[in-house]
Length: 243
Ligand code: BV8
Ligand code: ZN
Image 1 (tube, helix red, strand yellow):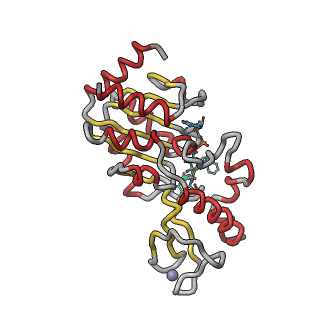
Image 2 (spheres, rainbow, N blue to C red; image 1 turned 30 degrees about the vertical axis):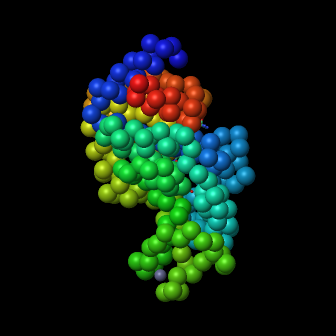
Image 3 (cartoon, rainbow, N blue to C red; image 1 turned 90 degrees about the vertical axis):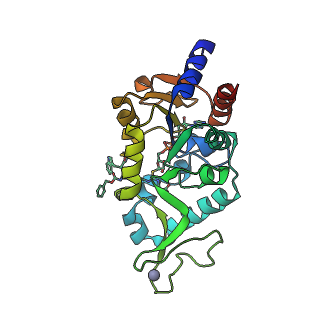
């Protein structure tokens, strides 16, 4: 990307009141968490379209739980990377919202304070029947784990075919339609309704920038694309912003 383009992005960040990041699995890739659809993708080994569904869970809760327990271990060992940290840093200067499709909690651990988890959290566990819900970072000795009420527990993630948490979705739409700059990082935008957010931003006059080493289906709708990784490009942007 030319230095003028980079400079124009930094200028837009300076002029912006509100900056919204929409992030996906790619931003956590450099923390050692495999993406879904990439070559090392999680979904290569397992067919996530089959496993990340309520039907799969009720058909074979043990198998689904084995997949989630493997991912929970990985997530809990992972650390936020320079991309997550740079987004948190930007909050010192601007109103920054993070609308993430990720379930790994790394944005919060990096220090971002306005994070909306569109697809829930793999660290939070809830009961399939009673209102038990808690953040659990230890491993389960028995899969599927049982609640005190006797029902099985599930990860508090949004499976395919399940609707997103209403309040999270509503707030996320509000931020998308009222931001000045939207930065879409590390997502193929293959999953709806999260993939509508950039269009909402654009409809309301924001500029939409993509940070992704690869072209995506929606790259043509972006005002600018930075063909780079999250852990490289975001710190570069924030450092240029601070200069
Ligand atoms: C809903 C949580 C309605 C679980 C996830 C046909 C049949 C059935 C359903 C549908 C259908 N058509 C559409 C649907 C709806 C469906 C959907 O969109 N399906 C798609 C696949 C076609 N959506 C839903 O079901 C949603 N709910 O619509 O509800 C409704 C309404 C009322 C009442 C009832 C229902 C719910 C969707 C949520 C699914 N849950 N995750 C879990 O994690 O286990 S989705 C899952 O995929 C993740 O959350 C992830 O966020 C999401 C998208 O993936 P990405 O994050 O984009 O990751 P990906 O690997 O694809 O891309 C990574 C990118 O990063 C790449 O571009 C790569 O180039 C880049 N990258 C790589 N390295 C780096 C990098 N970028 C920067 N730096 C790097 N280093
Ligand atoms: Zn219970």
